[in-house]
Image (cartoon, rainbow, N blue to C red; front, top):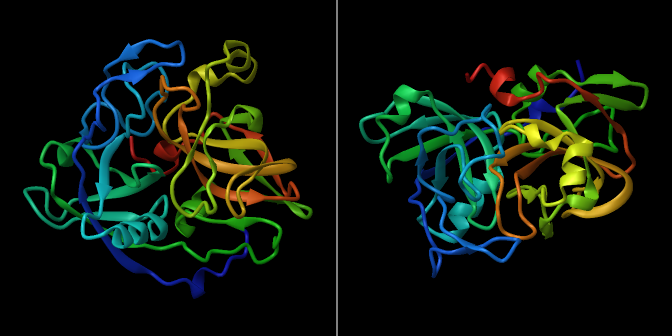
Amino acid sequence: MLRTNVDRLVKISVIGEVSSPVFRRSPYRISSEGRPVVLPGVGGITYNVRVGDPAVGWAADHVEPGVSVRNRESDDANMALNVLACVGNEAIVVSGDAKGARGVVTGKHGGIEHVLVDFPPETIEKLVIGDKIMIRAFGVGLELIDYPEIKVMNIDPRLLEKIDPKPSGDKIEFPVTHIIPASIMGSGLGADQTYSGDYDIQLFDESVVKEYGLEDLRLGDLVAIQDADSSYGRVYLRGAVTIGVVVHSNCVISGHGPGVTTLLTSRSGKIVPRISSDANIAKILNLR
């Protein structure tokens, strides 16, 4: 087991509410082929899309699995929710008919600034837009004591323990379903921090999709992005490796695609991806 500073981390509450779907200005999205389309997008309670389901193939654009959560008190409060909540954190419904039900944080979506939470189907049926969701935020500040060249973010230590990355000399081996070239990463580049939000895998080049087997990407997949550093924002850096989790569906808009929230990154390539079909948080956390 990798040594961490888990005994030094602070657990703190953050809260938001189930966010309504939104359309900005026009219902139309312009596809990468110049075609105007109207499709479901971000926000709300998504009844038939959860982590573990395909990230591609839906008649949708940026659909968020499960429940989309936002703090409407202020932008500052919502930033705290998005930075402090970590993938794998426990989420508790604290108002409405589903009060007391528990779920799990599965990702963060930048731009709209939502935290995404998975709940069992029986809870989903009871939730309504506006219900309050409290998250026991735990994980910010997590470090791998013996691997200072690997930066950790956005992950609950208990999830990291269940993933069980293996030491390999001065590197670690990390299970992933896919390895993705940094050359096809799009929206989200240029951000100055990666403690919230995501960036997108562009799937518009069919030859690249086939080469890397990206047609079967699933929500919740752990993936490795080659030649990508996410230490202080998202940049192309040859030899660097970023590990992330797929958090939202495919998109039709140019520059967009399935979103990836960063979990670990190493500028010096101290992470070795290991392909495993089981490397999906729905399976790792027994959500399905």
